[in-house]
Image (cartoon, rainbow, N blue to C red; front, side, top):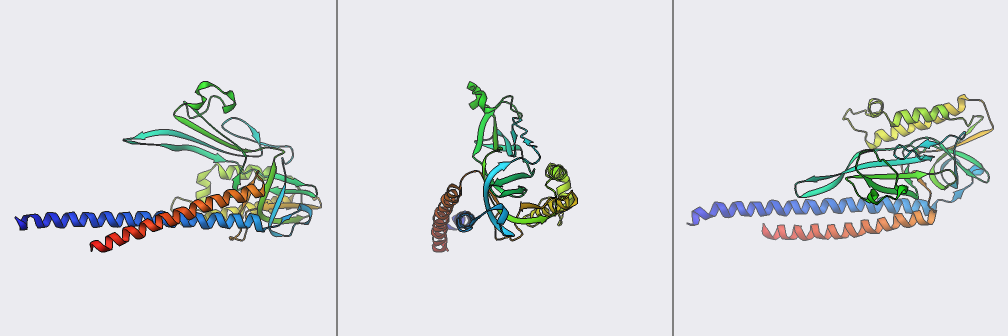
Length: 310
């Protein structure tokens, strides 16, 4: 009888060991992810708080923080695909509610964001902001639901069924006249023109053509754009701004803000105040710290149990 039970007991022990190590890896993975969130958000909060706000006319070249009013370039605005809203920048996302067995979740079926250049204007001048690659925090954010991949009406319709449906729509906007804060790479092009229509078209075409993005920047041919490859794409955008601005009829100066060349400096655009933005990053950092300590402690606990079972 003992010989018959031994293999079963051994198999049961192996199964428990496997479950223990899976739990350890699970908790350790979430602990590492939480630490990354902690570090990332603390870094952004410090950058927002520690970087002095400059004026456009006297801003130093390189990493800089600017604050002013968002304005269109040559009186041209972007149009958000979801609602047709006229804006300077947009992000949209369409999700579908899907059930799979006993679980259910929202699955993104389409999304996009604009990369059109817009202006930041303060009392001393204006800078061209190229939002390609930026982390944007707008205060115009709305979300509603519907019954089709394309919304038949916007959230302002206020219909009874706007809160129901298997599709969820999200729209974020920067509007003309909004307060705008930018932390990025500042460069003044001397003797250039502020006309950027051609550049906007090229940026829009690049963002809306994934095949071109992959063909131009997917250097390792894995079918995805890595962080390093995105950096290369942003550098191309910065070069395009310089080339287009310098090729047009001259005016005294054109100030530009693009994705930082210094990888230690984040590229942030926000329509909330610096204080509120820094506070948001700090709160996310606290959540990251809680996750790091909680999941890290759980990983140590699971490891101790597994060690005792050896």
